[in-house]
Length: 473
Image (cartoon, rainbow, N blue to C red; front, side, top):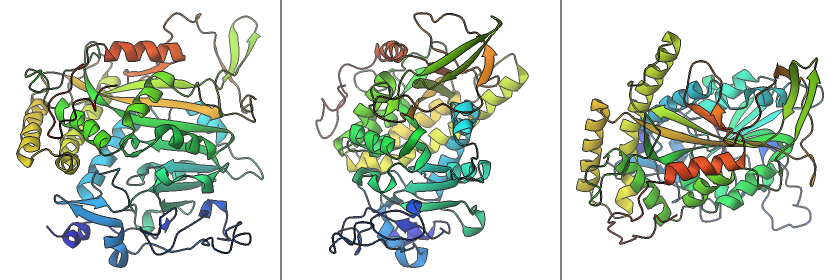
């Protein structure tokens, strides 16, 4: 299949403005952002005449497809970064939209901490609310947020132009082409909510990007990190499911493509292990810009508590890979069945979507096809009842150095909770999806991470590149 043949399969894409490119990527480098206003003027241009001014260059599929996309092993891949090597074509967009639906059904909304997000984005005279979606993929989350908050400006950023047609695009929503590894200074202090989902394998220096992302927030704004766990877990205890290899021949073959995706990403320069450590163990509690502990309480008649909390939190959401999960509650059972069916379709397409990455790292086509064929059989049988874990972390930006986040309007009256126990991780409390667990403290996050990691591989399986130590954490 030629590069143009792959690209011709892509859907129409609205005009999208590229920023942050190096001179080797496009003839013009770009500074600033539409988010700063409609003037499209570089505020530093007068001080430095050699600095490139902002351009309003727009993507046109018939002219620019080869500039933004390339072909690799029969799939269209972004042409701007070797770090993120998953496809950008119609098959992948279909998969990502199913994955998006499963995730928001599990969370019960487009975002966790729903009360705080809605309070942050509540309309205020003279204050334009802004939302940034980094790694927006198909743009589905970006567009849905623009519809839910029509008074807000919503910007989606991705390595590839989004497959959105002009008639699907709300007036308060637009997209930009960018590689966030190059920095986000043009977005500094501009956004009330920053959402960054499923981009961990494409980040070269996670702590730097984390600081860049937090810098995009206005004081009091919220950052939401969401990424996948590259291991699978059993249904009954959410314990680790061993990966099939020469070391564990009775392990799960469905686990193997995910395991090798992470290892291949690391070989390619990804900082995915830091992402895992930060989101699973550290959370945002150690982030300089993020308010960690602010909590305001007031007792009313000894029966109710008015509570506003800016406390950082992490969470684990387990999505069943197949419609095997059951519940006595008929509505909850319907949710579990639908999410499981979506995730089985997602993972069936997903383990083949990583083939270009695995082939690039040195595996043979025969090996990766064999893993995927065996994985498909496991998905159909559902005998192992496996789940994919989604890791989350969120928190609000301080109002200033060493100051708490500003208070939010509309404090909520809720029953007084029981005293905090040694393990205060709890189900999210949503009625219809039972496998979303919030970790209230850094200690909870660390304890749960230790439990999950207890039985994981200590020795890496064979890799053609003989990179046996690349998977050590």
